[in-house]
Length: 450
Image (cartoon, rainbow, N blue to C red; front, side, top):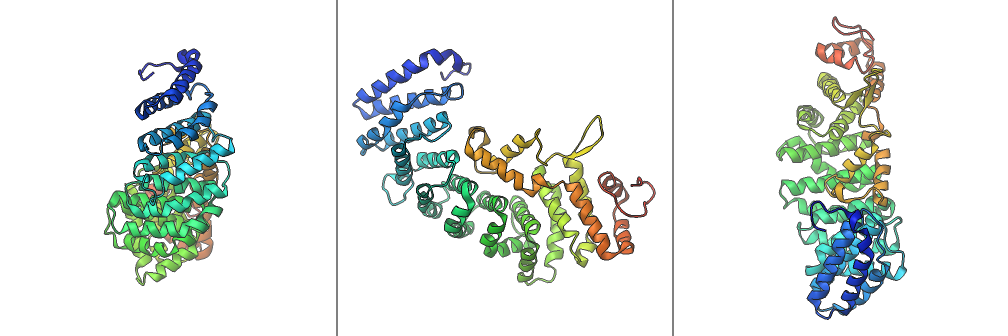
């Protein structure tokens, strides 16, 4: 079965007797090591075959609580039990419906991830993997599932070793029910993460800030309130430009999401910096740094943020108008697809029947969960799709938003000043921009009339 060319369909006739015989052997085995070996083989079969056929493992599921009780002194056997439960959930595409089994699963998660339990040293890694899967496959937030999060804060505070898995669990809870989870646990989690930031390398700083981005993506209004004390630090770091480029890029994405969702908070944080040139310097760095962004969804997010600035009456915006529209136009060139037959232009990141699965996979892999191991039948996958349906990056058509903001700007400053601003833009950029929007100016030579 471990052969590269193994064909699951050819093993189907042997599956039921193999599971039955292994289960009988598991019950009869006396030695702990034998039980572990049998469990590993059963887990392997379940993992290999679950993609091809729904496996009947009801007897095994009912037996595992008894085996757990018998293995009090054998942590490695308990690790094997947890791994088997994980494979069963993935094979069934759901959590077993039996209430005692669900309670058993919650008890295992609680014990294996409780830093006050001596056995957590051995069980924690498998327990965290099971926890992620359970939240992914849960359809509703139950009080019991929510109460497991009492273990999260100590785990995050303990060390950065399992930070990736801990944040994956938090992300899954936020997607499941942000309204229930964030008010209860959000402030402590954010506080714990902020504390860790002072002692992490660049990779860890990026990881935590990408988690903050996920909060802003899934629940922007509450997340801005939750992150409000931290935002001043983000603005200052980006202003000073003393961090690694990959850290600065994620700071910039946070700035952009705040700007898109809440311009009042954005302005307040700028004021709290106490620097007269705060907006000017941040915007200059923003425009200079956009070429380093390679992911199209991230680049579009930054372009949307720049678009939102065009509606703000501020001389700093007007002084940087050419740079703003240049970066937006370059982003439009990158994200726009053209129909070969009709010539119609379409924003490739806006949800459609053709691309929404790819976009959701992008969200799944947002630094926490490997999209290759999350099946599209999981409730979590469906929740990711819902997040996409609300995300400005995947909802707003960039060229339409730019068009609207240009009209607002022209009405605000008048046609004469608007014409002067447009004349500061390089001719080839105006020409490219005119392919997406109506410029609303007297056309310079070489720019097609709209």
